[in-house]
Image 1 (spheres, rainbow, N blue to C red):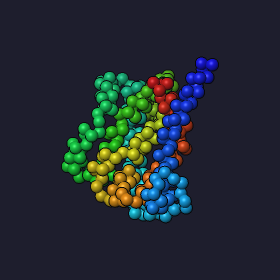
Image 2: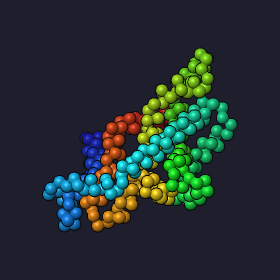
Image 3: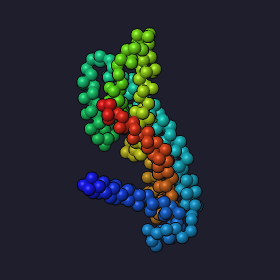
Image 4: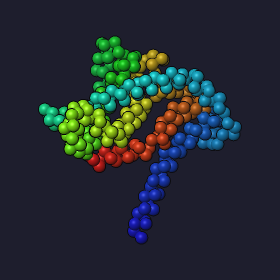
Length: 274
């Protein structure tokens, strides 16, 4: 009986959390299908007639095609840099006798605690001196540095659970350390790699502070920045703003529903192996 009550209470709490998160999304979606006049009369209401013109107007006026391309390029570049560097670093910190290993691990732990707003000014002046402001390369370098510490520690915790005996067997058979990493460790680490890819890409997609400071041209904006600029220009057109919000949310919602099982499995496996 006690277990049944506990499960019922947990279900009620989870249902409440679901409602809190879903109601704003539902309001945005319904308002995106209404006229602006209807939204002004009643913010919370079902659409009287479906208005797909709001999406067309938001897509063209907000220049979202360019924003999505920029986000894919920046996100893909950041994910690539983070994966290459972190796989090699995590393998070295886990499997090899690296001098100062504890120092590096402590350094990355401290790096996670540094707030982004504390470094945005020196980062801007540093990239400005290098001529990398308003460039995809500059923002990729910044994002890779920001997301690398957490991803490295997460990947290292997973690598610790891969038996060293497997890699040593590969070394005996003639593999180098790099060959053992590529042929033994990486195939076993596929769940955590997928998890790191999702975490980094979603953070890049949603990141606003550095994008707003470093990407100043219309042709360089990401989705988050384009949505912000769009809202600033059309503050009175709630229906079109809601449509632009749906456009910005849709890819992440689709990505979540398609990969939620792999993401949870990777996080759980990384925690258990760590």
